[in-house]
Image (cartoon, rainbow, N blue to C red):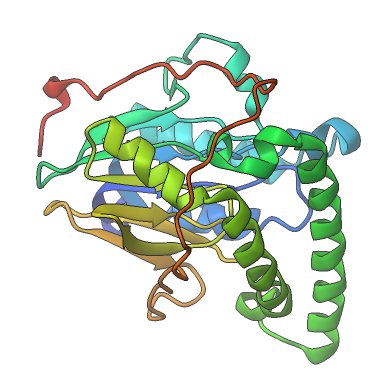
Length: 289
């Protein structure tokens, strides 16, 4: 694995990435490795669906580049970078274990403090998706339909000779329309914002719906990291506490604000049991640097 000279790596206080989907054939894993090699953060938050167990358990197609990504993360940890991992629905098996590797802390959600003193909840977000919680089979079936759409789109892109950054422009357009409906029935963003408020937080950083955005919902800063299947996006925190949405293929393109969704009260069906959320808050000793 070729490495970028340390002097050219960009220092940031925090790096937030989600939905890498190692094991999904459409994931931009090579691009993610290059992106990861461009930064030297003080801490990294992997916000779920890093591993796509739904795909891996069927294909068993583990690639060398996956090892390269893990090696890069381990290398960063050896250099003093703190790494935190909150599992998502595609790697939910990690929620069954109460353990941590020597170089990564695994927990369902984290409450962290930014450099400017603001408190943020960091969690994948699948537990706040009505479809995922009440009818998981719908989510699984939709995942395969999503793959079919991406495959068709890749073929169309090849015929049109589009660049890598535009590969999924068509599927993004279709999915954006579908996601408006999904977000309406689940009130995903509003429920996450409400949960962050209940934790005494000023904002929330999540993933899950592959919709990179930065907006405000009822006074709560809502940040969705997007994904590395379609958008290739991440959030960085600078030493001032400012959060910025970074787009690997087009860093100059501004983040798209969320479409307003009318808030409605939501209650899970009584027969749905979710894994317990374990409170964790970054120790004060981590401090504001």
